[in-house]
Image (cartoon, rainbow, N blue to C red; front, side, top):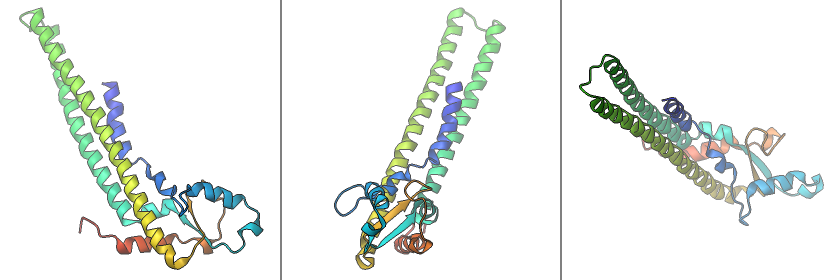
Length: 207
């Protein structure tokens, strides 16, 4: 039951997993990883950046404010909670049956050792099934989180491609904490503009 306890906690954690890091690994027009170009550009001498139009987007803030991200996260949390409640209910019922078996066995309530063994095997099978179900549901949550990550990444990349046709940026850096950017002039921060643009074209399925 200890393993099951950890899995139940894991279901809640899976819904909040930050697998949206793929959003920060956008592809540039030449097919290279943007994070690699970010590092190269930031390592270049100031003169080598002359004439380049650069901006950055705070991914953490974007994911908190982009309606698609919010909807996906809310759906994952709800799904995780429903799974956790269901598994907890099954685990409580199983624990009750285990205690009843233990009491009967100690009181010699079974007609034979064979009958007691049959009941023990039945309960052991229930516990195994519950463990298998918890493993499966946790894997499903992780898989769905990964799909959501790809959906978000593709949505953001598609918008940036259209957005930059009229903005002409040479480089748009994705920034998560201090991963890519230690300091940036606030004037180069286009996060709000990107979030507003993404939300303007997003239609929630809940509406």
